[in-house]
Structures are given as C-alpha cells and as structure tokens.
Image 1 (cartoon, one colour):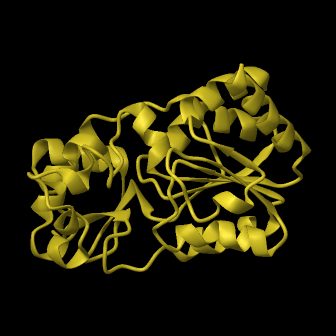
Image 2 (cartoon, rainbow, N blue to C red; image 1 turned 90 degrees about the vertical axis):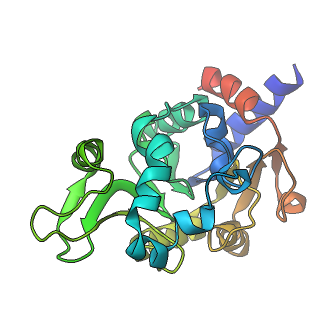
Length: 248
C-alpha cells in the first residue's frame, strides 16, 4: 500500500509539471539484466576484463580487438530488452508528459522501448564510423561485420571502425550536452532514476535544474548529494514504476 501511495504521489507531480525531464543511469538497466558497471558483477568488478582498457581511446587505437571481443556479449550479441521503467518513460513521452530523457547509458534500451527524445551523454553504439575516412555505419552493419571477423574494418579504406560511444580521452558529444543543459534549465520537475550522481557532467544536471528553480525527485537504491532537496524520494525503481504504469 505504501508503494502504491508513493506511485500516486509521483503521478500527481508529473501531471502537474509543465516541463518534466528524466535523468537515467545504469541502475535502471539492472532490471533488464545488465549489471551496473561499478556494482556487484559489473565490468569494474570482473577479473577477466580491464574496464579501463575497454573504453580507453588510446588502447582502442592500439588494439581494437580488446573492445570488440569484450563488449560483444553485452553490447552486440546478447541484446537486453527494455523493462518496466523504460516502457513507462516511453508511455509518458507518448502521452505528452515527458519532454526529454537525458541518459548516461549506452544500451539503447530507451529507444527500444519507444522513447524518441533521448540525449545520450556518453554516446551510443547505434552509430559507428571509420576512424580514417569518417564513413558512417549503422549498428546492424557492424554487427554483421563482427560476426564474420572479430574487428570490423572499413570496406572503403581499411580503417578501424569505432562506435560513437565516448571513450576515456574523448570529448562528450556537444549536441547531447547542449540539449541536456537546455532541458535541465527548462525543467520544472527533473526526476533522477538509477544513478548515484557521482560521474560528471551527468551529476551536474540536477544542479542546473535546482539553480533554475525547478523541483527534483529521485528513485535510487543508494543515497545521493541531492536527497535533501528532493520533493520526491524512493528506492524501489521496479515497484514504483510497475504501479506508475498502471496509473497512467
């Protein structure tokens, strides 16, 4: 009953908001079976993969096979399915309540659920490009390439093909950053989902909303630096969104 009351409260806040925006992190994807990168069972806790090498641009230039070999399962072959959180957010956008999703995630689950206005702060494997000639490749084309050979090379010039994921040593995408700032400033309610807000610049998004006079909410298992100023707080993402979906 307590969970239902919390979902009712959140539903009312969303309905009253003029410009409702969501910031998402890896915690929402754990419900789809994708381990949090820094959580138990995540990339940073695995002994067989050096996560710092995996997403390091200098190492990628030297040995792209390390990325393609070790990301194949969780980014290319064993594609996860959207969960109740992704589906509910897509539904909120379709109904006109949700204006934008700002995400730290690179798993494409927001788009698979049907969300259209998604700004990926850390890039996306949906698009790839040749590091030599700049030729663009879509996800399915690269997937077919790596099924044939471990590392995809450009058929035009033979250059290494890289995903448009932001690796360590690369700049974040200006388009996503600019839009995230725009929506954070305009938001009268920003809801943070599944992130402990420790990685910048994503962690600064709630600060932008707060300084602009917008209200904040959070659903996250662990505490964050914004907890004391939130008008809505909860821990159980799955439970809150199961009931929120019914209320829409």
